[in-house]
Length: 265
Length: 344
Image 1: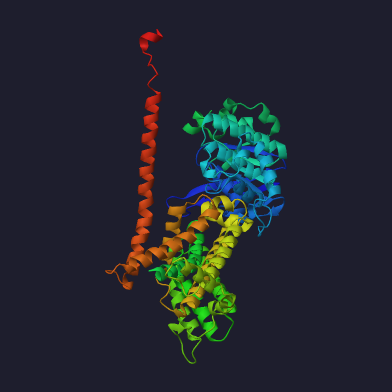
Image 2 (image 1 turned 180 degrees about the horizontal axis):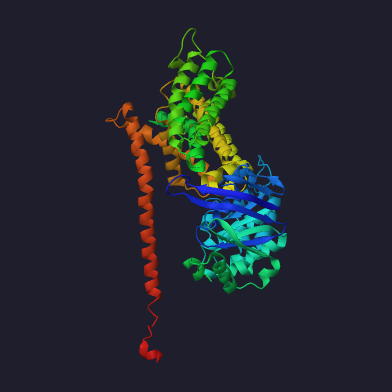
């Protein structure tokens, strides 16, 4: 489904600020895989996500989706088959447009946009049906501007918009990090439900170790631009936070030091 | 007095088409496009040139729209592909168009490289053709006789102009409203709202910006073409300050009529353009002021339209809060505060 082949990325090359963001990354996701990605700040998690989505281009290496090399494909073209939810709840929706218009924008993702009316009767019905799954009563506020929604509501809407056209890949970049704990839990549960419903191939970055353990069938840990640990389906079931920390220490020979990671245990 | 206001309503409606174009870039695309000063003249010049060369005024107007569309697209290309800052792309296109417009108008004279002015006094225009048909209907006489019978003294030469421009602007408003609800229109609005988001839904924001600028300047050029035919001349300097007039219309309209929906906002922009013309006409009747002061008056109108709404909003908010506070303090009279001892 998704294949990363020896991806390299260096920022500010040949300057004092040179930083190896990704170092020989190899990763393969099979259809229906839900992989959670953890790692301290600067480990390269977000860079990897941006590589896949096309916001950044790798210095070397190839990215394959459904067996097709997309490394050279522009971001907007790639997004036909990649659904994305960002960390910032403001980023995934158009605030001055209504809920139904936002859904119409997402609905056209894998179609050619033409001079057809964006929200017709048939689509509106479909939007209402989809919104009902969120249990946030948004289906009764179709004409409300999205800028008026709370962060949690906007993130739930973003998640729905990213998934309801069945993308080949779903990328979640710390999409619960900016929310308060109860909202974050709501979005986490929603993520689980929406991903399971359509068996979406998903890559989720998180700072929350518990979330990384609760969700998905595989887990990878990144550090300094490398994937330092891959946990497969069977191992993941018996994995605990302590085991993960020990593992990190064993590999790197140092204690996992990211206050954010520790705090969100 | 009456004829001055009547004339400014007619003009205001034609300029409203330009204001709709400005609305598309400034508000919908969030792109401060200064091409307008040039593309307005491009529209006027192209139409005048073709009319003088003997083409049908309708065809001349269509080609004018196309020329404006093209100019807008080039501004879009400069910004998206050339990565030039939006303001600068517009300014560059604007000054480039100055020379291009001279060249276009120069096509009317043999061996002439450029021409700054084309009179259309004796040429057929969309308006003169329409008047022929309109006059045969006898509506003017009917209305004017009726008005005179009820004692209205000032009647315009013809009601035809206001009727035709009103119908035209209404059609354009409906097209704009419809377009902004289509899939492409929605994507253009999202481009102005949140580029990152719409890119993640497989929309090519570059193309959308180019299309948006093209349509906007097409409307501006149409407005220019109509003004040239209405005023019976095209002049190289007629576009100076056009962007400010467009902006004034958008801001005045939005401040008075609100922006709740697209349908309402486009209506507000049209009304804003008309109001602007009326205010200008009234201001020019003050004896101290001269036509040369027009730009200064425009600046003052825009400044007022920008500042006054803030002031009124603040006052309304204050009054609302005061009222609410008064209500609450009355309803709170019966609440007895429990103190520590009561709880124990």
